[in-house]
Picture 1 (cartoon, helix red, strand yellow):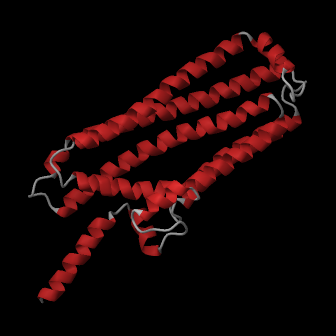
Picture 2 (cartoon, rainbow, N blue to C red):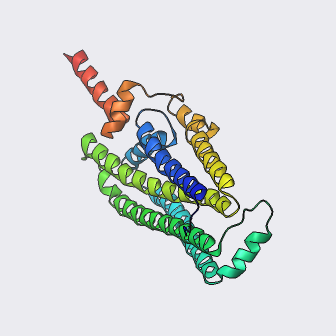
Picture 3 (cartoon, helix red, strand yellow):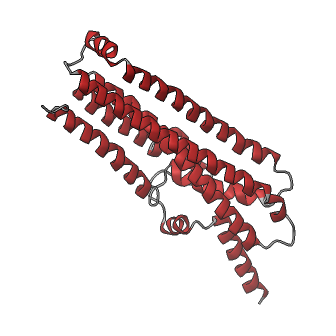
Length: 268
C-alpha cells in the first residue's frame, strides 16, 4: 500500500518544480532584467565605493549589524518552529484528529500526515541553514568594513578602491541572497501548510506564492523607486549595463575612467 496517493505526488512535484524553477528563473533573469536583485547589487557596489571615500564608518557598520540582527531573528525563530513541528511529530495521533475536524480537509491516513510533517521539517532545516550562512557572510562584511579606513587614504588609487568596493559588495550581495533564499523558504512553507487540508489547496497556494514573489521582485512600487535613484526603468537592461553587471564592475569607476580619458584627449 502506497503511503502517498498519486494526486498528492503530483501536488508535491508541482510544488518542488515551482520552487526550484522560480529560483533558477529569478537568478537568470536578474542578469538581463531590472529587478530587486540587480538594483540592490548595483547600489551595494556604490555604497561600498562611497565607504572608501569617508573616514567615519560607524553608520555603515550599524546598518550591516541591523540587517544581521534581522537574519539572526529569523534563524532563531526557525529553530523554535522546527521544535514545534518535531513536537507534533511525537504526538501525531492528536494532530490527525485536529486535522480531521477542520473544514475542507480530505481524508488522509496518519502515515501521510506524518510524512507531510517530515517534509515541513525539511523545509525549516533548509531555511535555517540559509539564514545561518547569511549571518556568517554578514560577519565577513563586518571584517571587510574594518579595513575600510585603509582604503580611505589619499594614496590609494581608484582601481584599488573599486576592487575593494566590488568584492565587498559581492560578499554583501551573497549574504543578501542567502537571506532571501531563507525568506523564500518561509513563503513556500506557508503554501506547504495548505497540503494538510487538500492537494488542490496545495497546488493553488504554490502558484499564488510564485505570483507574489514575481510581483514583488519585478513589478513592485519599491522596485520602481529603487530604479529611479539611478535613472533606470523596469524592463530589460541595456547591453552596456548588462555587461557591467556580469563583470561586477562599478559604473562609477567606468565613468571615472571615461572622464579621465576625455581629459587626456582635451589636454592633447
